[in-house]
Image (cartoon, rainbow over all chains, first blue to last red; front, side, top):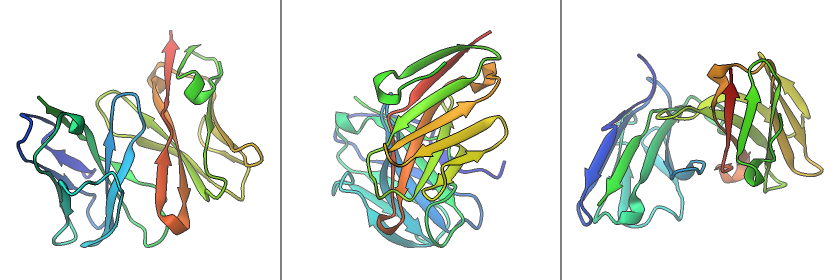
Length: 115
Length: 112
């Protein structure tokens, strides 16, 4: 399967713990995006990378959140000192484009539950 | 069957009927629009897109209509099948802002 993959698929953690999620985009896609989705809502943009550069961050991305894409391939999203309000599905998407957004291919998501 | 997006988040249709899912977008400066389908436990899947200089675009069994005057987008699915059951999201994009915003979604249920 050459689609976008995310690990883990599910994560349950206690409030105050740190968690890290990984996204492997489609090979050679230069853009990688992170979204957060809560039940019944559409995905909310968090941040995106073009190659290894993080070009934009939403104000939803508090200082407890950090994302990296060190080699321009896979990306990690870390949440420090998790809060119950962080419980959501975290989606990753990738696209092959140098301008605009066009078609983004989404991964299956990582569902985070903070107890 | 027809929905009015955020005000009627669930649409139920009979198999074989046509479905219309509506979306009222928020930004008159949006340049580009996408419809996504999301099945339970999966990420959103691209269905069809349309640019702001178009008012209609057709795909296989799907048609997207754009009315910029009233900031309204619709997705028409012909001969709806059980496999079409999912939540459908519209997304609007403003190129200069690199900003893609999703609507809240409409759940489509197809009855056999």
